[in-house]
Amino acid sequence: MNSNVGRGRRDSTARTLRAWVVRPFDYRWMADFQRSHPSGVPIRLVLAISTFDFGLLAVISLFSADTNHSPPAGAWKAILVVSSVVVGTAWLIKPFPGRRGVVAFGVYADLGTASTLALNPPGDALLTCVLFAVVGMFFVFFLSPRWLLAHLLFVTTVIVVVAIATYDADRADLASTVLRVNVVLLIVAGIPATSHLLVTVLSDDARSSRLDPLTGLLNRRGLDTAVDDVWSLGRQTGRCVAVLAVDIDRFKSVNDEFGHEEGDAVIVRIAERLASHVGEYGVLARTGGEEYLAVVSTSRLHIDALIHGIRRALRDPADTVAVTVSIGAAIVYWDSALWDQNVDIGTRATRVADSLMYEAKAAGGDRVVKSEL
Image (cartoon, rainbow, N blue to C red; front, side, top):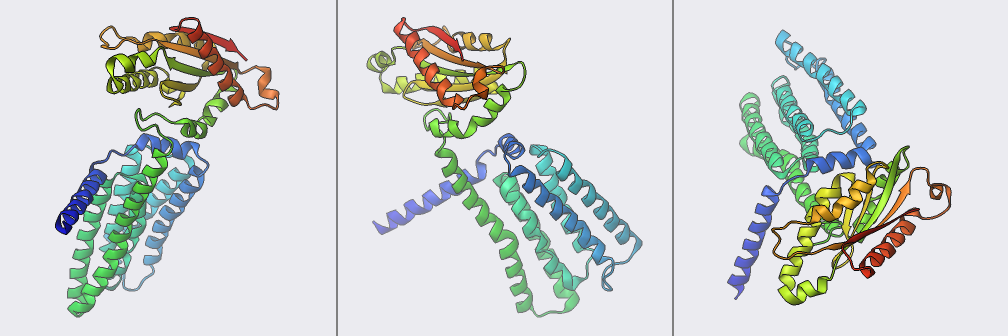
């Protein structure tokens, strides 16, 4: 019994680690989050200061009596200083980069740090390896687990090579060298690996609390936290915001006739097609069993086509279970008087959209009822 429990726990741990390694990393979401969230500016500032500091360390090392003062070494340190100024400035003035940008910065930081080790005195090289811990935290927060593992493999190799060189140059005793290497590896490899696992678990929990488990769409709570930017866009001249309440018609009969499994498949299918149709214009949530709520922003010339195009986007003659939807749409144009009134526009528009959706259902379903606020 105990052996089976232990084997089950080991298998569960192995599955968790495999899932962690192969999990996709949403670089686009990370970039969009950093660009829109208030924390994006101070994070870029910290990254810029850290990059400048790496260049400063290269400058300070020029004044060390034990450092390599050969012309090639000096030229390389000059390149490191100039590149750190350029890259640090880019962090300050450019928006947060996407996948290629963060991967390029991670590789640049790893190679730049490793190259300085060859220019520093052997006695300082192992201590300098601790800088990889700073680089490692960048991999933890902004790169995938696979890139983090590649980073850890690279820095572990560098540290072992440095340790061998230090042992030969300083004639240190083996026990002291092994002790120093172990301490450095715990800092450089242990902390980032543990941190990434912890961040992954916490972020999964945070995201799951905002997502509908069946469709992967936002739930009501997730919608409330994601919708502010859409309302801000709607206040721009020539634009509008529309709250769309969408409900599958006669869904109970689908479950009764085809079973709950097929009913779930219908809910997922509608969610995917809705996301494809309106996703680029705002946010979409599943707010009930067969109910969806979208908040979108587009031009006032396009809004009618977007709303009335939903029914067509959800239909496919090849569907084994054909369903229709009722849609209620509450539209707030940029010049609406509501913007200047002391009211919760989002709540009011949502209530109106829900009411219009039920009006559409009462009229037989498979139709759109809309109103301007």
